[in-house]
View 1: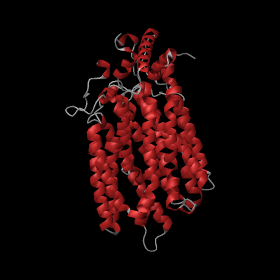
View 2: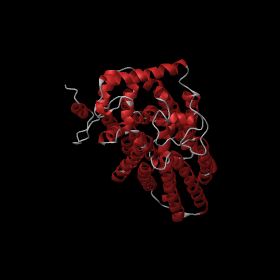
View 3: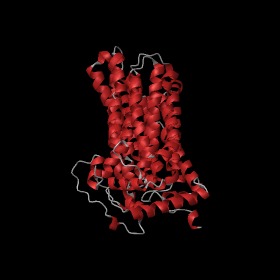
View 4: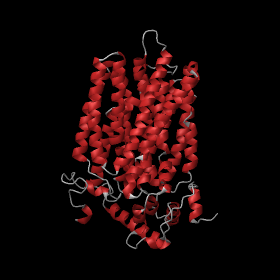
Length: 513
């Protein structure tokens, strides 16, 4: 088979008839290099296509983490508060382990190989969950899915950051968050269709289909991801020059063997210089600490309560004297599905703002709005009854979710992928993702107990206080990375945030001293 650019384009599945012209070798100035060509490239259909392939795991992430929320009220197992928390949190526990394992594995075997393994794990976990005869098997299936979710969350945005042009890296990377929201919505759509079509089978067959249907997109993602190019930056560090040429052709950039060799020598020389000191410089450690704490606040402020426990939380508000319990639970699933639609729409707006307003402003604004809506919702839940209580909760939940989706949700995954040097990106992103999932696990495990002991209103007040702490943290410690190349962002962490201009370093970079 020919290795011409045309055949390479077909290999990654772009058969839409696009007319993108490749960047010819002579268009790359001698002082620019192969990686500079990636940073300068205009975003074309192929880049969006590859970003979608990378974030298919985000769809599965959203689908498989949320379908338990719809199935939970119909599981024929006696669980109790702690058992419920353990069942729902099984995926989060697996995600913690998957994220930790992904770091060294992706740096050793490459981004593409791990993305393929993730798709396979999604498929296996879905089948085990659907066929579970009792709670223990279900938890095992959820943990396998969680391993895939955790690994994928550690890899996807890092992969995108390594080929995306710098001026559109934010909008391409935030596809991960948008795909998560689409997956969440799809889980609720499937649940509503099943429950309304076959309400009598809710506790027998419906919940199994809800948990098992994720097998289909998992297999599709496995087939499509097999045709993705490997990260050129990772290949250059490994000295795999022939593979770099293949990957660059798949990205519509033609380069000569001489250019690739010169770039590989430069990249490996930088790696050797770093190896003589340390890859984990103070700037890298500072950046890792900031991302990890950001992820903690992203989780403990309560967003996943709405999607993991949404149907269970909302069902009682649709009940009443003589109400059919199954119909009340179906109404709760439907209401949670409405919130999932809000999440998808709000995340779409994040595409337009993330590269215009920047990461800091969106995050601070998101946390601040979340405080307002949590407090209003808590007061309404405590003082109102009946329809008024339900309306206030639905509206404030919707606005809370919108604030998170636009300002906080995608920002964490974006900075996780863009601020670390290539040599440690896989491991650093994996550590950050594992912290995210450990925080998620603690929240999901303890929420049923917190609600039972404190009540929903007080739990919402606690979340509001944590949102305030999150906004203050971002203001104090997160610099503005918008518009920087992936190699420039780490310089912003050489010292504290520059108060006069958060997009500039506050200290002289160590490399220039």
